[in-house]
Image 1 (cartoon, rainbow, N blue to C red):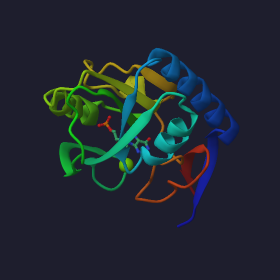
Image 2: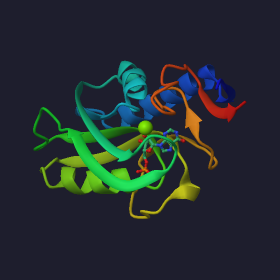
Image 3: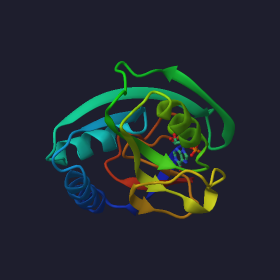
Length: 175
Ligand code: IMP
Ligand code: MG
């Protein structure tokens, strides 16, 4: 079956917003450095675009967790597939996510990463679906776009591992 993709946020709007958020982050961390933690795989496009626009010194690490099976339903189970390479002690950490939905992934991640002794830990997401939040304690420091409760793809986000490479945010409409 071929999927039809409706554009929700065009490429130019995404890029413009990332530039704004990057300027804000550069200002907030002025005089310091930031250690970006990219949450694979979805966060990878956003992390690169964000990192390119930051004017402060940046280091990068990657982590892979899973909270979803295939399809669009949350399993509620979060497991670490790939852990970080570097320690977090004394670092100003910024977690970079593609989307915060129920908040289960982030609630779990924040809990384990806080135990590793970072100097600070903040959260940055490309997309947020606030209506879907189950874990209310998850506080997002930087959000590019809050979106309605629709399943989106592109800019790193997948539907059964497809569409991550779309340069815009779209909604899958089955034909
Ligand atoms: P949470 O734990 O429910 O907040 O889910 C976070 C993860 O679910 C994200 O990192 C995505 O991988 C996936 N996810 C949630 N909503 C969507 C969506 O609309 N499209 C694609 N993936 C999504
Ligand atoms: Mg996913």
